[in-house]
Image 1 (cartoon, helix red, strand yellow):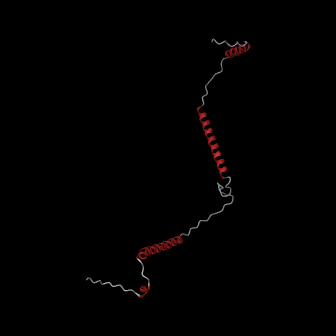
Image 2 (image 1 turned 180 degrees about the horizontal axis):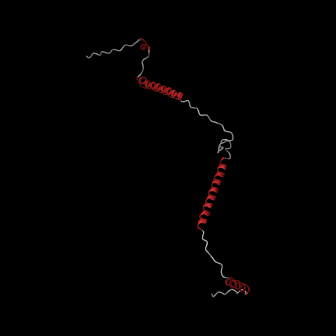
Image 3 (image 1 turned 30 degrees about the vertical axis):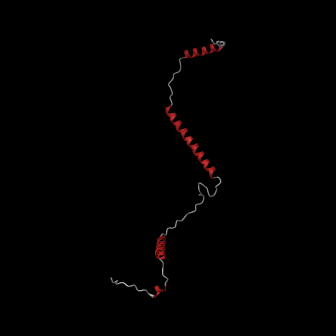
Amino acid sequence: SVECPFSPSINSDAQRRRPRSAAELSAGDAQRRAAVHEARRCEAEAEAAAELTFAPRINAVEGVSSRLKVATEPDSYLERVRQHMALRDHVAACMREAEAENQMRECTFTPRTREPPAYIVRMARSMAVARAARPAAPPARPGW
């Protein structure tokens, strides 16, 4: 037979303990390791947090308030959003109208005309007077 050079020695403290089952040996040891790991992780986070010394200072400024005012005026929020949208639509319409006017200013055509001669103006006036003096012709009968 093969001789084993190792022979365990059990001290008196280990002899007084109750024996552990296989489940306690496997799962219990894993739980203990996880608990130790979690404790070390928490300690490392605490040490890292101790090094972080920055604490923001928030200044309260008089006369400055939230634009949304959700905390102070929650009931009127939707109405204020509608008013803002209507104002934005109105501004957009004004901008479109101004752009259209600007384009039309560039694109207008004005023909060069001359005043007609005086005798043409006299003829047109006399024809208008004669037309006004002439009685209106009765409407023509249809040929059906």
